[in-house]
Length: 307
Image (cartoon, rainbow, N blue to C red):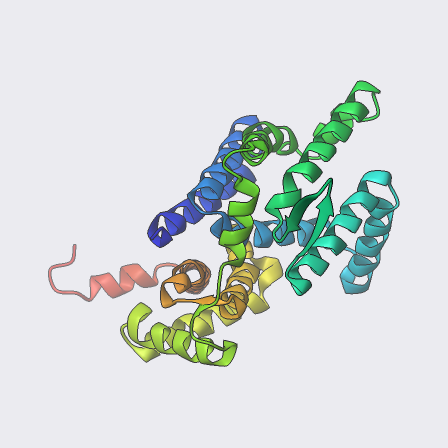
């Protein structure tokens, strides 16, 4: 089981993200990209559980002045622009194909008297990946990819392409073993554990009260501190600002995932403690700043033996 290494890799990513936010530059961006690669190869679904909150936090930060309606409008406009291109239309059709494949369970057909079975993404994933890579190479050869403008968008773009996207793409492109199929099977997985979402949530709550927290009051205190941090999301510094939306997203994914084991709660609990501890630390720091100057000296002078 890789829950503990996964939680450690998750904390490493958050630490590298914090270091980048404190000192943006090529070196910290490379460490951030490398930490994402380590987390991905530790376990793919753990990577997704943190990559989505990170992307959401970045998007919320870039669109902070637009509001909810402006964000939805901009997202819809961007989606239309992407799917209007040949590459975007190809990806959209493939996503529809995957949805049909998931709902129907696959299909079979004959080609040159040979029976062809299409049951999983692994059968078609390599074809689509190779087509997309060929398309990217063709656009690059024709000078239609403005790499300098792309790198200028964010200092992390180039390190992410070199230190994360490149090794992961090479890993996916390997024809044997079929890593695309392995990735899909591990992320989706088969139903085990509690049979329903409601039963799974009840089991997870019991595990939180009895396994992850030694007392119910401690769980309640952590939940209250996290709720306060979530309400004050816009004032939170990284990585707490990632943990605030990340924790409920991870909990939701763990709850609805068909494989339901209590050990999967470790990753959300790490983000819960991170956000709660950060909020408690800010309460303590705020109370120290509000304390009148010299009050500590007057308190200490009353203690026996103080000099």
